[in-house]
Length: 193
Image (cartoon, rainbow, N blue to C red; front, side):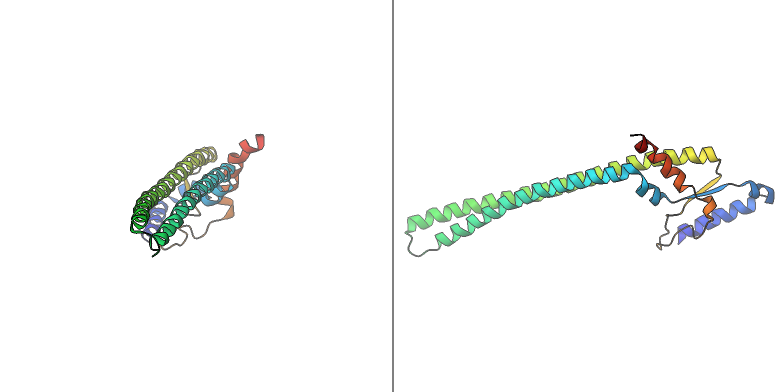
């Protein structure tokens, strides 16, 4: 809400500062940055790479969990064997010792699985952020080029939302929108390939 008021105040201030003839010369543009981001071919490529990495991490985690579950089953069997009344005291002591070693091994394995999971999640998150930042940088460069080429004085992002999850820009004429131009320029490289 505060952001909406700030934008409204800014627009009103600009309007009052400009004379009628200056306001007529003011060139306003709008762009849907979400549509640009989603429509950029490199976004789909980046998402594919992240999804591949996530799939690989899940496979590695599943393998580790399978090993851990097998070790748990071995510990359960050792526990059952150690509790059999027909075993001698010496055999029970050996089984108990093996069980304690297996329990310690399970503790180490569990910590390793948790550390692996946390590390991979952090790595994937960082990779996703780096990829997104790189894409946004490329998109912003093309947007800036279009803004300069078309001599826009003001440009608003139609996809931007206020803190109340309401679009900051409530309405604009379609003639102001240059989203398709930006998407086209971004994807021109893919068409060449």
